[in-house]
Length: 208
Image 1 (cartoon, helix red, strand yellow):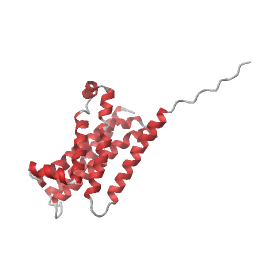
Image 2 (cartoon, one colour; image 1 turned 45 degrees about the vertical axis):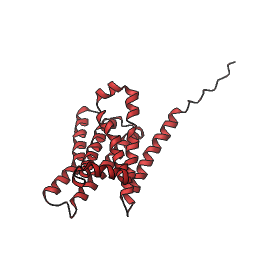
Image 3 (cartoon, one colour; image 1 turned 30 degrees about the vertical axis):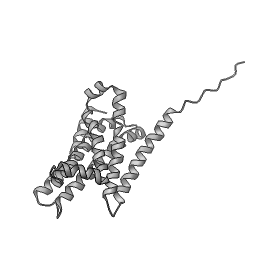
Image 4 (tube, one colour; image 1 turned 90 degrees about the vertical axis):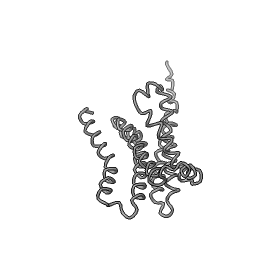
């Protein structure tokens, strides 16, 4: 894959990943956030956190199925954007909803299961973002770094659970996200089992 094409694709991915927050900023500056701006910001940032987490998890299966190895170059970028939207989502809750009232936040995390699940998802994403550099890979070693970055599975599961428990009526979107996540996890399990199967032994040919 030509380097110039990869650079153009990265610019396009950057633009696409920034478009949701750009739209929110435009709506805020044009008084277009609706009757409940806090809800609009909270749901938008939360949805995009989950969308980008699922896209991050989908990159490896897509690479294996399509043979397009250059797709792996976008996994870290998309994952960092998922953390970015997760931070915006969390900050909306901490700042605009709870006004950094630590006592209220701790009580919420303890008493409201969907808040607990959401906070767990963010806590599992944080070490992935902080160790996403090449220097971190060298410092931790490839094996330990890979083991650490498997936290993304727990983060995605906790994120979907957070969304599922938050929604009170129409569960269509949480169900779709849960189905996609289940398919992505199932693919990894099947792929790992298949990769561990021993190669079939060659039959010996009798010699005369």
